[in-house]
Length: 362
Image 1 (cartoon, rainbow, N blue to C red):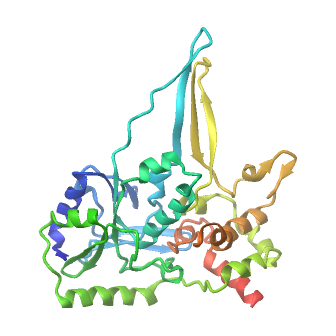
Image 2 (image 1 turned 90 degrees about the vertical axis):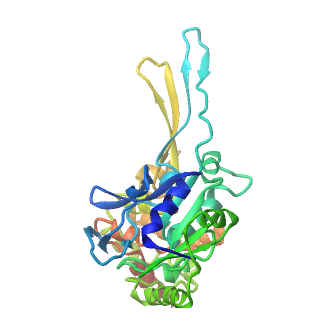
Image 3 (image 1 turned 45 degrees about the horizontal axis):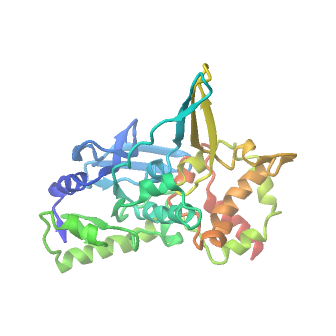
């Protein structure tokens, strides 16, 4: 079906009738992902420039609504929040303790305008948080009944390599609606009954053969324009066999251990729990907060630290993303979004690191 560009707000409004809509917005000179109050909050008409350690955004006048790529945020921000209160309560003077009443179930989320790499990242997070018997209930409550309206990527950026990871530029699974921006509108396809129900509320018409061909051409043409590639053939085994590669020693002189890559990564899930107690020793709350394997304390255990040097922490992150994750979940932990490259303040490129190590092992 073909939806005119001027009617895109009607799609967003249709979603808002049933969901809290999470969409790309303009904020602080970046494209961020957050809950919108109205269809007009969706960021349109911008272009970004990304390269290792560099991000700039500008207005565009080329008629494209979504001529920009991913910003620093991903659906992880809403599904696995950076700070989440698990429970709270009050200690009484007689020694009793009362737990605060749990909030009601949250309104279902609709993710609008996310890219195929992020849609695949949600499926990866599902494997982490929803596999029996270890279902994470806070994640389940947010993910259950969520809606994914995914925008196929026709304008890849300099740090993108989703084609190498098999996650884009066309979303193939896990979507409710799939959109492709054309010169004359949006080609929209439903992937679930829920998606078909939303599509049925819109003033869309059947797409012509020429419009379908245009969409196929735009997506095919996007692949060679990606700024990065990664050869994944036997990469898990290559990395596992290169734990003493000298490049890890070099990386400890480059990486500054800031944790940016794990924060912006759409699949990193490490967390810690903290207890917050007020000065009167009456109010207490337990929180779950994001953690990072780049933090020195992350691998600290009784008797020592399993990854006391930055060399080992960086090696762990790369091998977990591109090797061990495949053994754990059957998929790579990297979806090729390129955020870790863009938002690394010293411009480290995970594709270059993996390629250097591969080159010496094959």
